[in-house]
Length: 333
Ligand SMILES: NC(=O)c1ccc[n+]([C@@H]2O[C@H](COP(=O)([O-])OP(=O)(O)OC[C@H]3O[C@@H](n4cnc5c(N)ncnc54)[C@H](O)[C@@H]3O)[C@@H](O)[C@H]2O)c1
Image 1 (spheres, rainbow, N blue to C red):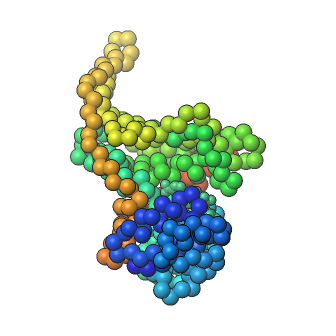
Image 2 (cartoon, protein in one colour):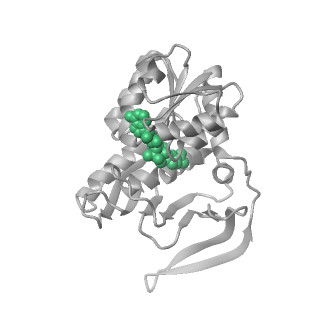
């Protein structure tokens, strides 16, 4: 599988390092508009060709697959050109800037019979795999809520708001872990720079069942927090991504309730039992993602982080954007 990577900014080097070590992949070409970034590629990987012209990724016959690690607003154009030129495509999250663009790419990929995949890296982490196993085997019971916090003093992005920047990770985890279909969203947010790009935002995803998901994203927090709580009626999970090894805690915590018929009061019984720390695989997730891309092309199977998971994230983000602009109005999905 001969691969070209477009974009050698912050994230591109991680992709280059992982694809260089992926069995069945041959990294042939790295493209970036900035010559100083390409000098770094040549220094570290003298065997890889470099170019400032993105068209090379689409026109060269010795390229089978294109990996896109440029800013979000470029994803659709680059992915479309790559597919039209018969290449398989891996796009960095978030897939595109709109639902219509993602749907057009999906239709094109089906028509051209090429793999279109989105890098939702978290799905390949040991922590998410462990949480999936715990939920799927009924360990935590019926899931009741998903509550994520992803805040720090972050880089203000010039083109996308904080939800588009940070929430794709957690939304992809939500959609992967929870089988119920979300029905609507409410979101609020503020741009303290007054440029219309929110630097702090709160998103709620609503379901028909007794389940609710909430996301707190900010570039303006003095502390960095990366936590996710998942509540079940048997147990509750805490995923703290900043913990070096003990990333998951399983709390034998819960509550039961009954109604006091006479006084019409809810009587709640609490249970706070042991905390269990399951072992979590610590292999680099991006390596697993790169291997999944290559193997899915070779075996013609669907990857874990497929184009439909990319689309489902964009549907929630686009609806959240609409809701923010209408002061938190509920938007149907
Ligand atoms: N999966 C993850 O965990 C993860 C983490 C960080 C970023 N990302 C995603 O990766 C993508 C890139 O983010 P980043 O932080 O690396 O951005 P960045 O701005 O640091 O890097 C983008 C690079 O693309 C190059 N570029 C832009 N337009 C180009 C063009 N037309 N032709 C050639 N080169 C061009 C720029 O020169 C730059 O070096 C985004 O979609 C982002 O959301 C994913």
